[in-house]
Image (tube, rainbow, N blue to C red):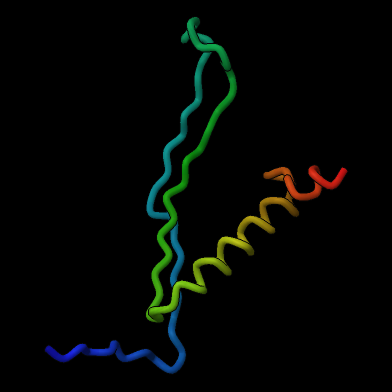
Length: 83
């Protein structure tokens, strides 16, 4: 049996889009809820590439987390550990 190597494009394209999202937001009507008023959005991101290397996913996540930390949406746990 012969193994076929995939053909890699010279300049592979990458696409990222929001495939969907859900919002969970408890209301005051849910009297049994402990965290009334706290909400959560769950994003479903799709990352598609014409390249077969997994390295780009790691790079994307590092840049995405850096953005969230820089913009104040996520605490920088590494910095907190050093204090």
